[in-house]
Length: 146
Image 1: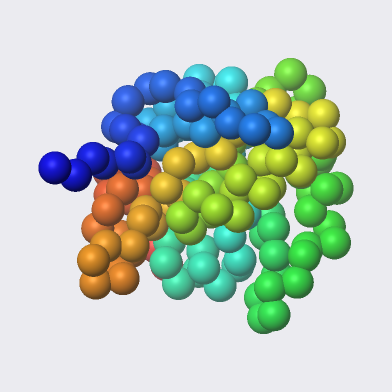
Image 2 (image 1 turned 180 degrees about the horizontal axis):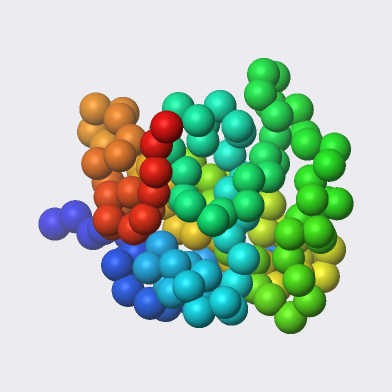
């Protein structure tokens, strides 16, 4: 018997986290954004958003810059400018890894920050491909592609 240890990302719940407010499901993130409770910040690179797709209305603010994946020196200032006082910030990346680091940094900056579980593209499947297991797009949430 195998046990699936991956979090249920279909519901509206907050999962406890260390060093930031928590991990949330994509539907809950969208609910918070739609209600005005939160600002969504997409921390993927410009190239990722351009090639793979993006969430309409999300603030585009790379955590790391392509090529080379160097830290974005303007991240802190951009994040502070994007998130008004009293609002939560929900952070989105490709798979939910960079957004954890960004949520930790946002918390250090004094923001109530949440990571969006499984990111935009979800986890890799058995063939090492994304887009088939979890994530923002697979859940049918709004996104566009140029």
